[in-house]
Image (tube, rainbow, N blue to C red):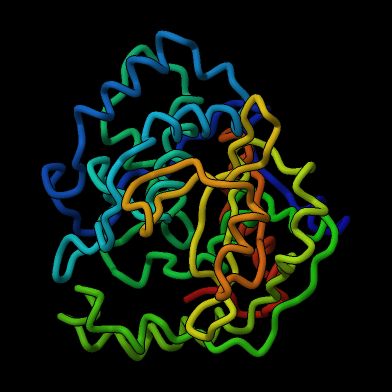
Length: 323
C-alpha cells in the first residue's frame, strides 16, 4: 500500500488549482445542462453564510449532501441529448451516482472561497470528476460509465483515495463480465441513437474488466465500520455480472456514531439516510460487499497529465490506460 500513498499529487505550493476550462468540444446550453438553479442558490447562500469552506472536505460533502435529503429519485438524468455529451446537473431529481457526484462537486467548488457562485462553477467540477482525464469533448465515451473505473480515475487525479485495502478484510474480485452498457444499450439515449458507439464502448468494458478491483465482503464490513468517516464514498459491489458495482452512496455518521449509508434510493424513491452500512449490505442478497474511497481536498488535484497517466498505470497495472 505504500506505493499507492506515494503517488504524486501536483498543487502549486498548496494553492487551489483551477479545473480545466469547461467543455473543450461542442456543448449544450445552460438551460439544457443545469436544472434546479433555485436549489443551487439556496445551498450556496447557506454555505457562504456559514463558512462551509472552512470545513474538512468530508464534512463539507455531507453538509451539501444533507441539503439534498428528500430529493426525488430519478434515473437517467444524464441522458440529455441524442448526440452531444455535456457536463450536467439536475438538482430536481437524483440517482445514486449523481447524488454523490453533486455533493462532491459542490464541496470542491466551495473550497474556492467566493462571495457568490454560478451554476457553471459546479459544472466545471462535475466535468473534472465525471470524465476521463477530467475533460469532456462532447463525446459520450469521454464519460466514466462504471463506478469501479471512477475509483481508479479519482485516485490518479487526486480527487479521492481508495482506502479499501487499508481498512482491512479486503480481497480481490476477479473474473467479472463487464457488459451492462452494451447489453442494455436501448436504455441509454446516446447508445440508442448512435450505434457506432457500441463497439468502442465494448472496448472500454473489456478494459474495465481487467482492473484490479478489491472489496470488503459484506460479512466483514462491520469489522471496519468504526474506521469510516463522514463523506467517504461507498461503492456497493454486486454479485452479478454486468459491472463491479450496482450502487453508490456516502457515509453519514451522526451524533449516535452509527456509520450510515446516505444515498439516492430507488426503493424509497428519494435521497435518504439509511441504516448502518453493514446492515444495508445484509438487507439485499445481491450485495457482495463494499469499496471505499476517501475524498481529498481540491488543492490536491493532479493537473499534470504525465503525472496523472503515470499514476493511472501504477494503480491499474496496465501499460495502456487510455480510451
